[in-house]
Image (cartoon, rainbow, N blue to C red; front, side, top):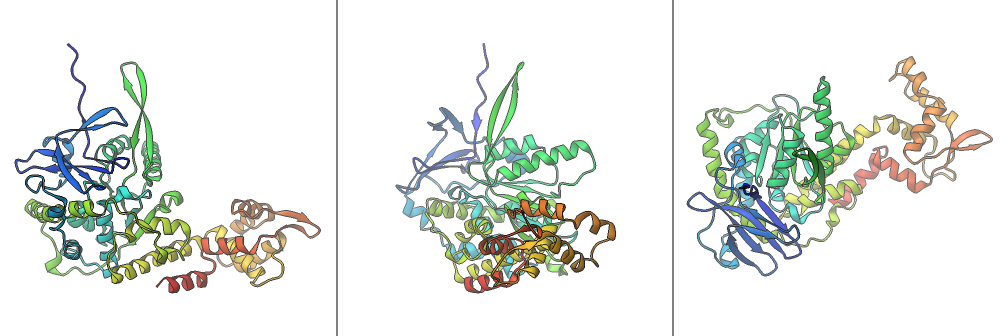
Length: 462
């Protein structure tokens, strides 16, 4: 007799066509059930299974013996007794008090500046409503050894973020795919500098990078061939979810970095009362303290999941890519003070990216263009030979003679300029570029060549 197919366990599901959110919640007896919330009608009920009409299959809440609940210690919201009305449940939510308690929980065993605390709190709230956002910004917490970046996770975020799974520097691409698809929670990757000397590790890192690049949006998927008998069948995994990436340096991959909000940690002197115990009982107590907050975070989710937010006008002065990445957290800030601090954080992120971009060869070439074409000018034509001589004079003390000879030549410059959209033309004076003022302004802002433009935009936003 053939065995029954394994049950399809899922922690949550959102059906936007029917305005339904399905979330795993723990009953008083310890078992797990589904809380089904209709955020159009404001109705709440409970089910032991849920049929997905679009996929023609039934999903089930994870049993108490589920490996992720046992090994990862995911904190599932507790059931508030029998089904009650929407008004009864939401009446228990005081958002101002919730935000204050989340900040206090994060800050209890950490020394953080107010701006960091605001960003971390907003990200916690975002993980509980991330499905309403097509863009899933990642949080990149980085800093040298001893700056407390892992402590932020181990003492706070792993307990508060929705269905948080903490990978302490060891996760395979296949394992990450399956856990994201099944849990749809928050993935936390520690020691994620993606550096290794072995070929196998480099190949694994490349696959992880592909997953991280593609999991930045709600539509993010990854196809993997699964073997059944002698045949392989493609399985599509959902990989769009909030991710926290921790490392000792800023992310070097440009595509992945563009999907991140960066939070740099600095060394601090930790007073004795902030040094958390290392015994297991402390972790257990923190988990218990977090449960009460999570029971209110699920109410925050129910209240705001169906919100339709307008574009955040205060973020528009920033580059479009950064605006898209920053908006989802903006909607999780509910006071003018927090939003002002968040604007400062976004501005600092923009300046950090621009400062590093200006030091690349492309940034140096644009600096030379700006020197040769100071605005306003009647003509934007500049000859490559003149660019080469100006470049050599400007950066002669920063490069060796060998590097200068390899880099500073019309052919190499033409190739780099073309990659930025600055195509070369041929005339009597030799090869030249003739970009529009609009294109130059865009490139100057992108590579941080005109910081005054950005600073003026930031002042307007504030």
